[in-house]
Image 1 (cartoon, rainbow, N blue to C red):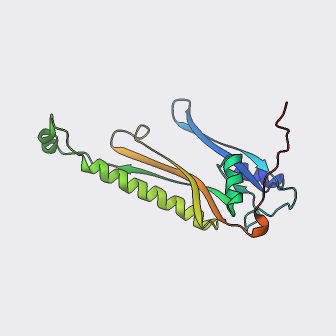
Image 2: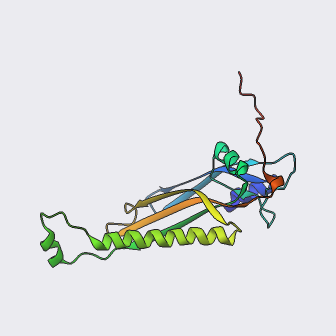
Image 3: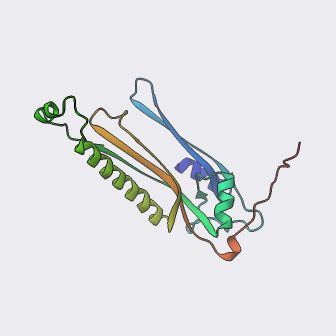
Length: 182
């Protein structure tokens, strides 16, 4: 993320749109490759008007269409924000397992683990937004899984774009640079 941000700032971009994240294990699973890709954009009518307060380009996972809707609504993007929590869920006791054999019964430790991991991840995402000067978060996506960490863990991941109200002068109607006809 920092390298992507540095490249956009070196281009004097106002922001990065369409940020996509992906990660995968490399080799025997001992290394993790993390990839962040986006498109640097510049507002030519008034360069720099959409940059963050610290002078850096904004980052957003929103598509071009979603970005246009955001700008028309009077808000501007601040930063791509995320929160993550990997939560250990206590193992159910042997006696409790025997009581539930052949019955459809709730497993409260999993429910509580899911709730707590969600709350921690969402609060971490909100803290990132507040740190960067955002007053809200739009386009939130989340995933919950337990595949990567073992059978007694739950992972909750949330991501979105932090936004803040824009000035009346910052509300724009985007125009096409490439013709849409043949």
